[in-house]
Length: 316
Image 1 (cartoon, rainbow, N blue to C red):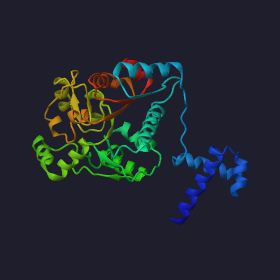
Image 2: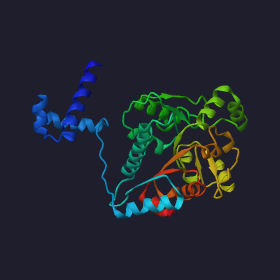
Image 3: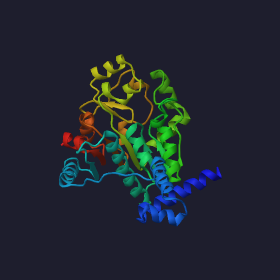
């Protein structure tokens, strides 16, 4: 363990000297007393460990115009659009959306006027957590907005992401002692009445800011991709008019809740609860989310928005 700490400290020192102090690899080697080839390997290790991250900055007139247009059309507080031109990969775009969202979250924390942050689940939230820098915010509590999803695909579960984010921020966190999908609608109803789950829902309702992803159409959603929903359940939701979901709540084009046997099994806060959160931050990438995102924006659920260029163009 001592050796691991020492190695990590050396890697971090080398990265700081090279990337922040702008020393050459030869100069860094001389400073720390090891060979230049060893420096090169340590710099690569810094990237592999996530200590160093790179994003191509492409702030141009088109991007700024999109941000201004979105802010004006949907009366948003904050908007950031990530360039998706020049053959950028989906992974790079998603990571940068996560990075910008993480920076915004850090700015909220630094102002010291929020006591709790709620987060949802899925890849957008996972990217937010991955791109969050280490801070010290002991006054802050990180809260899951929905139940956990089980033992598979752990990296996108709400409770796991809450724990990871709290660790990075040196903050407190709460746990949602229930699955997001109960076996039956009756079981979901009973769980919501229990003291542990009702207190978790109450905490989620009262967060100062909520960071959420936006669901695609049901048939192309993460629910389907991960095998959490059957074909018959998808058909039932689509027939009922569902166009997407937010924090495990399905809604139609008129922003009305869609109720089916599947949706009644879900456990977490409702969209009505989210509407009362002072600052709802949405993160999304890809035109498949255009209809659901534009509906959430049209009806005023979202205050702050972090998306990619193609999605921005699709919802304007």
